[in-house]
Image 1 (cartoon, rainbow, N blue to C red):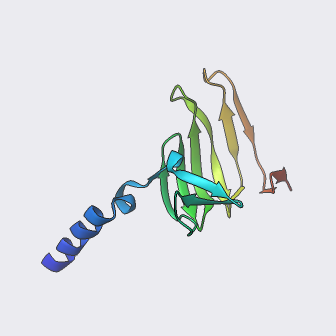
Image 2: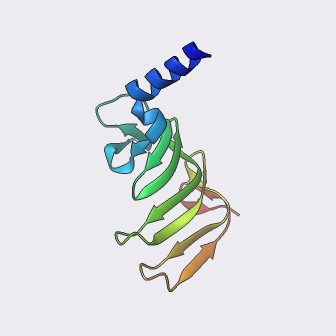
Length: 112
């Protein structure tokens, strides 16, 4: 048990991105995939900052939220293999208008 705990502490200290995630502003978009700056491997992991969610092999995956500069919710929805999927919604910066839309998207175009 002690060896497992020691190993876990070492992993968290040596690789803080596993514990904390990557800041959205530190990712770059190349050829439709997201990478950490100065790397050649598409990023997989948790993303934090003005956009929050997860990336898998450089593509947005699962629940995702984005915030206005004032910290208010801008949009929320789900991605599947880098494409919007299912229920999505957006707010204006003052949170007065909520627009919802549903469906599956392919290359940014609704397909159903």
